[in-house]
Length: 244
Image (cartoon, rainbow, N blue to C red):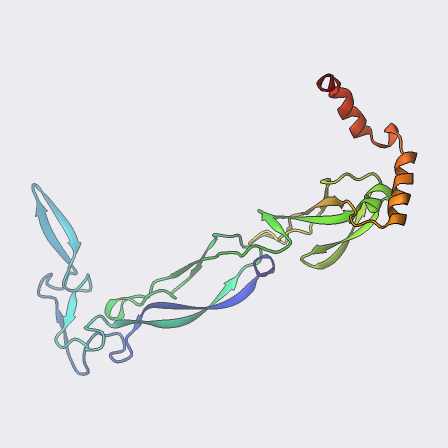
């Protein structure tokens, strides 16, 4: 239901966050920052490969261009440490299994005060005990007694919004599908459009009959003719040659 109607979830992740001791500078208190002696403050180093020169991120300062004389002992000069963090996420209505959500500036902290990255979360939607989902459409199976299938009537059907009533016409066959328009999942980031709920009715054959029920059913069977079961009649007409 949360994937269908939307929700707000709080998750805990372990990520590199700003070091509490140095405040992200990577330096001990009072220590100065100096130009990186390897790249000369450029953050890039040039390496030769045959006739070509390739610019790469400096391995000493990692592209920052400067280093600290006395690195912070807690984070070893990184300015960040791995620690748990709790983050709130808004799950949009209609989100599908496997969707990826982006939370800007909730990712890992940059090196020594560098910009914070984004957090990407892959959403896994649990299976529902009643509904199956195909894009914005929902599917479910509803058992009905054979008397209702024969005579017709109404049957209560669960939806995301509560109970609905499905009109079952007389002579409904087991496995027949009915559509409840607009009772599916809202289209994610759409304008309120919903999919449909497709209901497959399964005719339940009664079991554990008592003597009176069995007698009445036998009486009913004797009253029925081929005109009452056209599918059966058609099948056996087509299958005659196999019964020789």
